[in-house]
Image 1 (cartoon, helix red, strand yellow):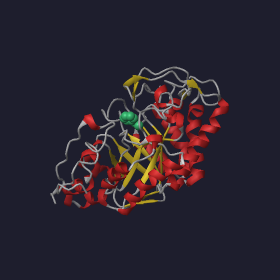
Image 2: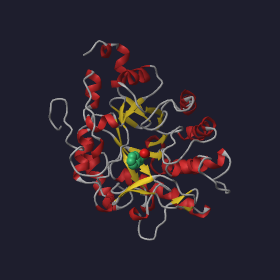
Image 3: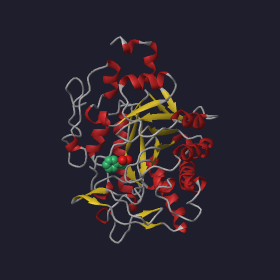
Image 4: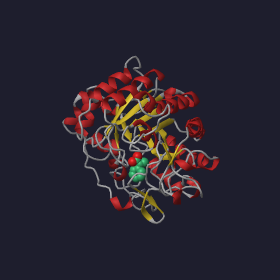
Length: 376
Ligand code: 8OZ
């Protein structure tokens, strides 16, 4: 062991903890990573079970974004969690992870307007808070394509959408997941409601901060009621402009209010992306500590997971200082299935190949070796 990893305070990153009702063996979380390798009908494959099992040393795995219903899909070959076949496919994944002592939650995803007709059931439009199209692109069978124009959800359609999140959460528990993480980040449906840079509604789900947070609040309340708040987490990215989300005019007040209304639910965790997802950590001023204190006030069992560009020293410090319950790593987990052991030993990290991030088979997916050269 190196001198730095033998400091007593450094042991915190590798010590057990709880995120609500979910007991984790260490504080290193595998962040959700879209890999576009699901089978027909959004059914997880045996290869996906191998990939996740190889990474079961993480204290917690957050699955790749997984659509909650057909119109929640935005990209080719992403998995779903709403049909019996998808539940059976995920069961292979969760069994394989649990057999190695790991924990895994399902990331519940609805892309909203970041979608393309070709990945949706025939005749289905993408839905959003708005009818305005984003300028971005999505990944389809014919490569990257501009996203399709969405249809603004009618107010009377929103309860059905909230129910779809609860249904997907029940399916996730049936599939053997330890809980769920609602995807409230990166410009997808929930952010399309949260931000005044996108949401142009005039009903009870648009306008004031209270109104724009309402959809998120209803989703989290319904999911927590369906499977238990202690198994329900949420991912937020207050400063990420991706997928043409722009930035809200007052992110501190918007996300402060969101956390204030969610804290009393006693959720398992909030997983927060600091800065731009996968990019700079300092694109705009923001007091993340204020958010954490507000979320954990009176709810010491609720975990706070931080993410985005963490190095080993940053992660050691975040947990040792109490600023985070756990630290999530995304890209490092692609090429380092045994990332926790490498962090523990301060061993060198392998670099992932970008060309195999999205789609394909085993190459660049299940063939990154462990430290000893084995495939785990
Ligand atoms: C990369 C490619 C496609 C989707 C996200 C689910 O940004 C994603 C995603 C990432 O949250």
